[in-house]
Image (cartoon, rainbow, N blue to C red):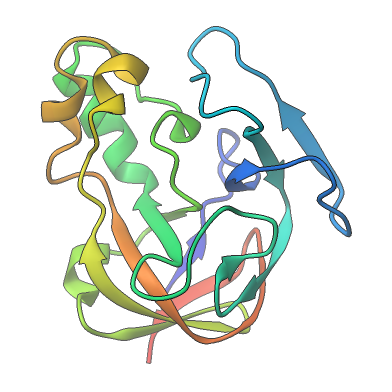
Length: 170
């Protein structure tokens, strides 16, 4: 078992591509600035301490139902990606993953169901890097993320996820 990342650097879950009008969660809007990407029009990054997960993914996210409803990355990989780029750990929002977790090998969970809070996810496919990684991280960003980009999951049981929740295979 492990927890949703709760270290000083990762006190929030992250929802990417959330639009104005997101309700029900005390959140902080993060605008484009140093180290942040300017994603498609209308998109913004919002960090929250809890989030409702539906069959389509995180409530308020631009996700889609199916194998890519929720994306996860290990906080340990943020440092590895940074090291390959010759710098400190990359910020999790640069990779656009929904959840940052620590203390568990996500790759070992392929094809398995995992409980996160009251939500059950099925780890289906890797989150391969996209061409935006060069823009977000600089030259070599795409290659640095290969093998470290996290996993995509489908939602088996919708529920609530909070910072500090256990992440456990079932």
